[in-house]
Image 1 (cartoon, rainbow, N blue to C red):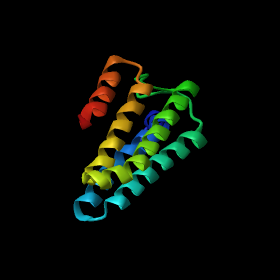
Image 2 (image 1 turned 120 degrees about the vertical axis):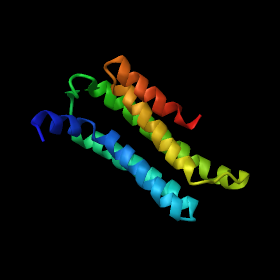
Image 3 (image 1 turned 180 degrees about the horizontal axis):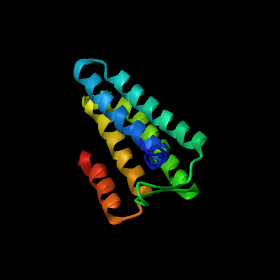
Image 4 (image 1 turned 90 degrees about the vertical axis):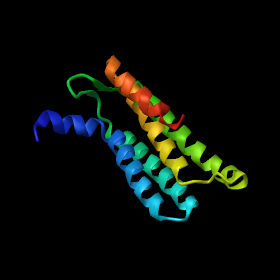
Length: 139
């Protein structure tokens, strides 16, 4: 791998954590019966991405300038991650009461959060559009 690709991957690690976490949870959910476990694992993925974002402290541009990471972007990403985690925790009891506690819901929240994070870091229209499409996946 080239040094530019490695630095780009290190700047976009929270997004990669969310993407891989959503795919893994989708596979686990297809074979698991416990939906509370899925929600807990989704919150864990959000916490891991948030901790990585806080402790990595990386700033700069990646992927040829299409992806920008700065202090304000990190702050906005933390707000999105915290909001998504709170949404998942608050929805557990309500989803059980209304009988829509399916395993897809936490996965869709993770993918929407990934879209939010991509929109926050976008430095061009293509990145913004990609984030918007990921964010609207749950509609």
